Length: 105
Image (cartoon, rainbow, N blue to C red; front, top):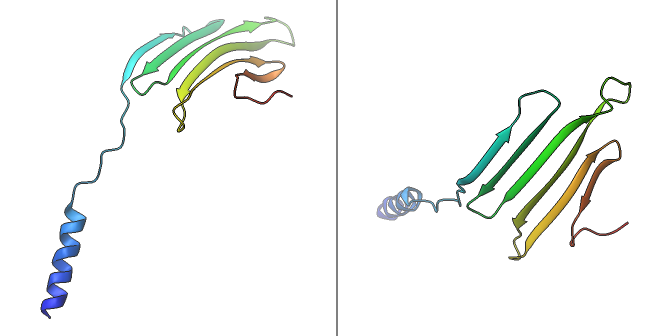
């Protein structure tokens, strides 16, 4: 019986131990220009090294081919400690990313 009580107490202590806090990033910069007419622009930087900037605009306005064309970039630090940068466009030709780490077709 003493063994069960000791085991239960040990389990209770282990479960009550504080868990490590996950890495929580804070926003260092946030810009947003989105009035909902003809396009948008936004960007942010976080304390964990993530950065993103993007802008989009309507093209071929008033035609059957009207669409939005997007240009942007983002960067982050990978698990290997390397900073990865990606520049991209998105629109009629689909999503087209460019980065040193992205294989070429």
